[in-house]
Structure formats: C-alpha cells, structure tokens
Image (cartoon, rainbow, N blue to C red; front, side):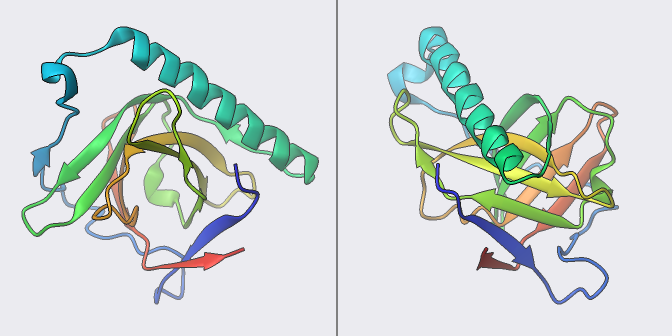
Length: 173
C-alpha cells in the first residue's frame, strides 16, 4: 500500500469536512450488488477477501505505528454503495461501534490497491479523525468504477445513527 494518504478539506472553517444533511435521513437510492456468477454469493471468494483486507489493514496499522502514531481499528459489519437519483454514489459503511460519526471532522483515504482475490475490486484504508488525535481506521473495498470518486460517505453505528459526509477536495500529504 502506498505510504501517501490523501486528506480532505472544505470551505467549512470549523471543520475540515463538510457534513451534508447529517440530521436528515439519506435517500436510500438504488442498492447495487455484485451480480457476477448469476448473482450468487461466492463464500470462498468472500472469505479470502476478508483475510486479504485484514492483512492490508494490519500493514497500514504497522506503518502508522512506525511513524509514532496510533489508530483504533473498527470492524465493518456491512458495506456497499448506494446510487442516488441525482447520480451521487454514496459509500455506505455500517460499523461495529457506538461512536458518534457526526463528530468526524476529517477523513483521510489511502491510495487504492487492486484486490488480487476479487477481480475488479479495489481496497483503501479510511482514517476518521474527530476530537481525539488518534483516528479510527477502517478497511473499505469497492468495485473500481470511474463514477465512484470516493467523496460521499454514509457511516452507520450500532445505534443505527447515520452520519453523512462529503469530501470536497483531496490533497496529497
């Protein structure tokens, strides 16, 4: 994985990320699934993807530790994309935590890495910063699609609280 991370900035002076409609429910839009192999779920491939993703996440955690920083891993319960009627692709992540994602003020994403065990999919590591200098670290895999700019995010916690965030600009760090 590339050692370079991208950071987000916005016009919002109080935070580095714009929280769009965080108090209103997001449109459910169209839920998109992988329809390859007749739409059947391939359990072996999915297990291999999970093992590979955990390895990628652990590599990134070690890299962060070598730099003298820490991170808090968060398990992903469910993830996918939602295509909204206005064409926005929303990267949806249901995470196993009680953390209030409305507190997130900055999102950093790694360079993407092609997933060798699931053709057409790419992996990124997502860092979520709030008031604490130690970020949450989350693995994310997505179908490589030029329409998905990885700028719109919906995070859902264990209380089903939704928090929507929009990245307005990427900067190399």
